[in-house]
Image 1 (tube, rainbow, N blue to C red):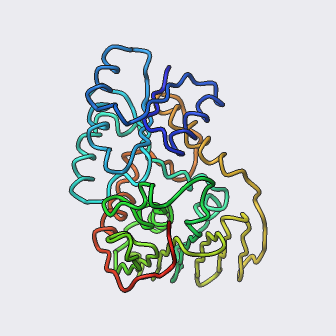
Image 2 (image 1 turned 60 degrees about the vertical axis):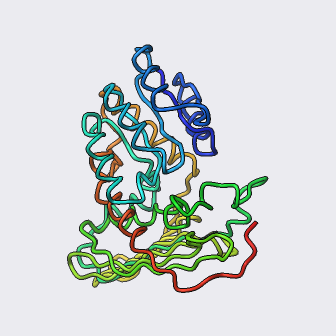
Image 3 (image 1 turned 135 degrees about the horizontal axis):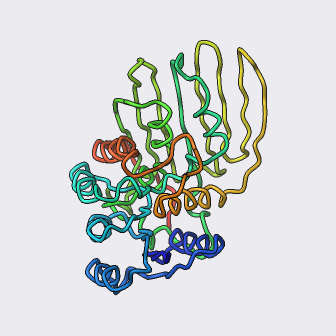
Length: 314
């Protein structure tokens, strides 16, 4: 089987390289100068192509997924799937023929500490918080925010860029109700959020929040869950967790970040070829991530800007 990887940005390149590391034949195609029509022609003409990875800008989803589904070819689409509810609804309908063999790129579901939380009994939780932050000006060598998709008012911003935290919250606490979504913007980038806080309520009444920012001087990624029997505090960067209360303990689960991407890709290839998947607790199969995708789109549409930052963002 051959896999087409569409999109030559950093994430598309990662997927292409990972497919090579897994011994899978892959072809890397830049979106510039390409089209959904060209993809359709390729899928019709080349029976060796058995899967497609969509690593384009968020605005380029529906047309590619429509072509894949019409050809019966499963897809791996990067997150976020959509930033408007109407677009997500159209994508969901278009994807239906191959949704059970496709995945969305929520690779944090493979983080060893998230898997620990996924196996825990969180039924008595009354509070939860997910947070991620980093200095976007220091994100990558020879990279400028102003030249990236993240700087676009349509499809950019920190909420969409760092939406894994919303996905993790939705996976651990199904049925979340969206509350207020407050953001800080920047005068140089109208409509782009640089720090966002999202209030959530679980069906049990548990109160939670997800926060993400482009401003923290030190990269941080944490999960805090409070329950009647236990507290859980997980540092997803250091991969350390501290459990308080019943069964109190502290532990570390060393991991290599790219292994999450590799694990997600292995499961995608298994789905595409009809083989058993890894057994991960929350497999990001496309037909099983609709709640997360809907929450992300709803949060983006509910953003309210409360102020602006003054930090220089080149």
